[in-house]
Amino acid sequence: MAKAQDRTVLLLIKKIEEKRGQIKDAEHPAWKTNCLIFVNGANVNIRTLQNSEDLINVASRVMVYELGHAAALEALGVSNDVPKMCGYPTSDWIADIKTRLTKINVDKEKRNLTKLEERLDKIISPELRAKMEIEAIERELED
Image (cartoon, rainbow, N blue to C red; front, side, top):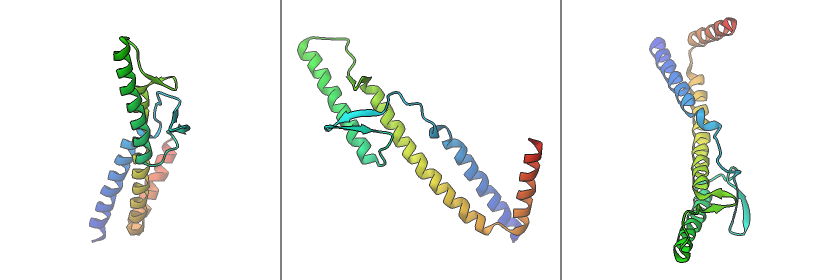
């Protein structure tokens, strides 16, 4: 029984490690703007926004500005002008807002993976725990 359970635990640990590897790239995003935007009469740092509703609100303001800019260009007969807010193209703002949303989801996934690891740690058999510790020591000695 313990051996089957240990195999299952090892498979689950491997799945958690794979998921951590998949989200690693999103932990250090490449921002296109300085992330400081003036909306609704206030400066907002999109890197500090914590929920999707706030980010959607900022994206909405950027898109409204972009549509208004396009309409003004058409009304004035001007072309080849890229709409910018706070010195950056609106497309860069939308990209950074998407990046922030991804980062929020990654942080949530990391917390979930940590909870899963803690639950698995509680059911690891003493034999498997000893085996894992020996393997960890071997890896350290190889470095």
